[in-house]
Image 1: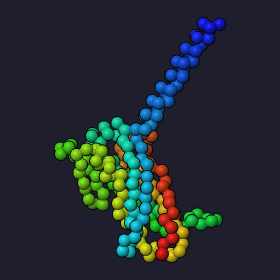
Image 2: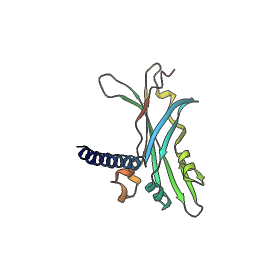
Image 3: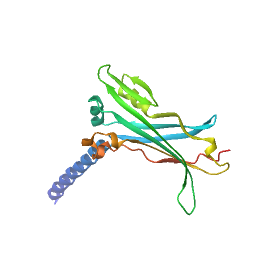
Image 4: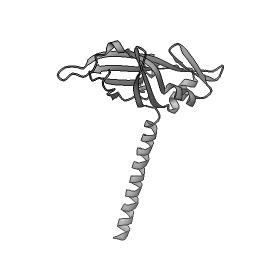
Length: 190
């Protein structure tokens, strides 16, 4: 009886080991590319409101290889301010989109982040990703767009622009890098 139990114990143990290995391998591969918005807020400046946000961006090995081969990654930062309605679709108050691109220049061995006709160059990919992950002073709407004492909801989304990914890679899920819809209530504007 004991020999019978030991035989099946070893088989069950090896089965659990295989399942654990598959689970952790899948988790490691899925964690390769990720984009997550951590925080966002709106700040008044003269007659405008400016968006400041912070994202966490991780590139997998395939994206890093693609950058080194000369691919340009274009990211879209999409902001929307809406006034919630009870029985109908939300009323869209303002929409703003900003494009930010990341490229590698092989001759100078620098990573270039281009935003609003401004370019910054970095010696490492980590430095470039850090710049890419910070959204600072993006003009999103004017004070005149708002009704006083009306509640609003702000929504922010950041994603890799699939239209500008090379055709051969557009259908692959590894290249569908999109953040969650980050929404918050900025409070009443006065």
